[in-house]
Amino acid sequence: MNEEINALLEKAEESVKAAETLADSGHFGFAASRAYYGLFYVAEALLLNKGFAFSKHGNVIAAFGEHFVKTKIFDPKFHRYLIEGFEQRQIGDYEALEKVSKTTARETIERGKEFLEVARLYLSI
Image (tube, rainbow, N blue to C red; front, side, top):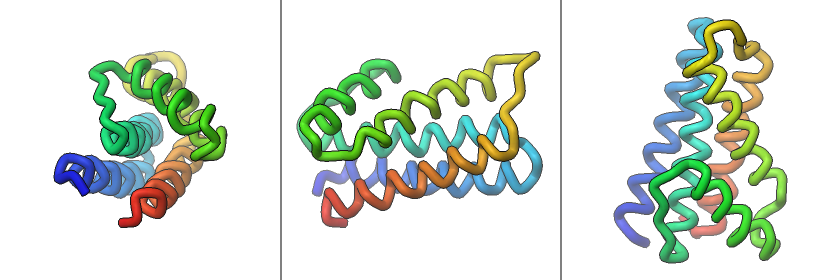
């Protein structure tokens, strides 16, 4: 497997662990944002494995849907995880008046763990 794919999966795992630490400290918006990055890095790794690379979040999310969900390689819930995670990241990083709940942050973290696990199985890591 490609060294960059492995590095992205390691970043994904590190992001999810950092998200757990942030959530444990009560920083739910930042936790959701970091957990989203875990999801994002997994999607980037999967796309890179197919020879695709994108610089924008929206392009990664759309390409994952096209190349992995429409082709039935991955359950559509993982595409939804990416979309919803991106929305939570926007709230956590940029919204002053809207907050990410503890429940939402924890759910995004669990989704990051699940996505990483199924990606590793798919990539046979």
